[in-house]
Length: 496
Image (cartoon, rainbow, N blue to C red; front, side, top):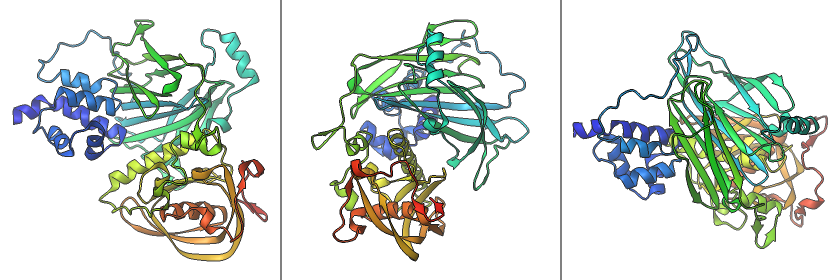
């Protein structure tokens, strides 16, 4: 048994790492690959040798880009001599390394959303308090004059980028270094409204940031540059299948220019999406990996809801928001048992943030926004709220225990029936009891616009839609008649 576990050690480590990268439990992975959770547990403990079929299914489900296939092929193989691939030694001054960089690019037919996650390790002797990132676009690669003219007339703006950043799920601030028409450079500061989060020597943390760029400014290519010593690099491109995408890649190093990728790009189709995945280990420092694509079909078909083309609700449905009429929206959500279910809770929050990013990519939310787990088909008591000021609020098992102050009426929208807006009376102040990821109980007071946002999401978790809160005889109005899009709610001399 010990020999079997030792033989499979590399595959086991790779499988665990990719589950961590994708945020999947053994049970969740089992559901995706058609194996039992017990089988996966035995594989990871070394009591069961993985089959080729399982390795291939797990590689596809985890979008590992061939990493698990390669690890399986290496099972029982004798150690190889050092590869001839040139791998420059880390620069002496470099104390920060990347244990894994995982980047995904999601395209909905008009907007790209890039999300980059890096597992950083501080191998130095001093705490690290910031990280430099770059956002660069080129609509017409190979024609710099045309691109320069395009961005002079249509510069990339901070408002449209909608940058979000966090370290181990703690929201971060940032400081702009360079601001040009097609290039942004900024320092992510390891601090937020609630504290500072330095990365101390010997520690690792997941740094994540995402941004949005419209297809009018994003060219049909995506490049990853290796600027720090990196152990693992993976890229995922997620396109509408109806566009019939084709993807290829080239690698540029210090010693070679424009070679094809050494590892094949894997692809799969699910739920109307075509996903391309690629990964590599120990990429050389200063290497550049460029993925390019073309769409064989001209444009995606218009999203439809109940036979109606291209409605506001149809667009939300197209990005995965459950629509009114689904029983999950009128069913009280199942509570979390925390901290026992902390892993599941974190995974649900990651899905909520991903849905919020997609929604923000197709609609401006001047009043802030929120998403509850039932709205993405998950019957668990979790919700996120993004305030107009940029604050991110996460709630587990929330319930309103007290209402205070007067009531006011404001128009609200709901992603689950986004074609209308309804005038809803809400208390100006609410006291909310909720649980944190470690199982501690809290009571938080929310006021004005923040209270309205939170109350809306708490209602979702208790199986209620805002229609049930409207005064008798009052009906929602069509969104075409609503004039408050992109504006904040008004409260006398203050607004939220």
